[in-house]
Length: 315
Image (cartoon, rainbow, N blue to C red; front, side, top):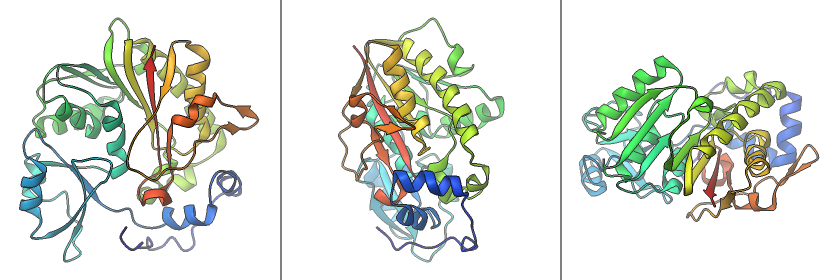
């Protein structure tokens, strides 16, 4: 890992007492705080619909330091050799040869493992990082439904899919919990969340955080996961993920699905990555033992964003 660089102006940041109390009970507070208040490493994902990883390495290596992302073979940590940070301001990026994507964000499509010819749904697709990653794994075959509910976000989604040369996607606008009438081989539900894993790139999340908002968001996520699971074919795979570190939004939501759908089954996630054990009990609620198979990542585990990923099979 590269040397941590503190974010200027964060020395006087004050976390809410309830936040400190909660996170001290969940992880090593001092390590979490240290990583959370340091710059996030920049990373890109090579778009193999247009160029190979070897070609992009060759094109960029003159000006950029490149390091493989261990859990995603198309991922690269990237740093300019002269300290410039304009990774989104290159010819290669404009041509869609790579996507600027946080390294932990690459995990859900890797775990979903879509294949050429699959019928896939990305429930909350905008702005398109994971949809474009799914499309490249599908090699632009099959059908990818890239859905989102907010019109302004759909504009970014369409532009990014076009820039990446995606030709097997249909962009739709609908509430994820309202989608009906179809069956998918694979579904990605990268749910809207409180974003407590992304404080490193959005410090204002510290001010916004409050337990009532977390509970409200978890209610929406529970509605989304039930409906998404119902859209899955028998034998199909769904990946549920968030960039939140809140148990109510992660283990609690998966536990809710298991309690309400007898044919839902949590599967193992085998990745070359440092991980922490999932939270198995929170606020006196004990979760299903199979939730130990989920992937919980704290910022200090791999020097990334915090992330949560669950792989769910329909028996």
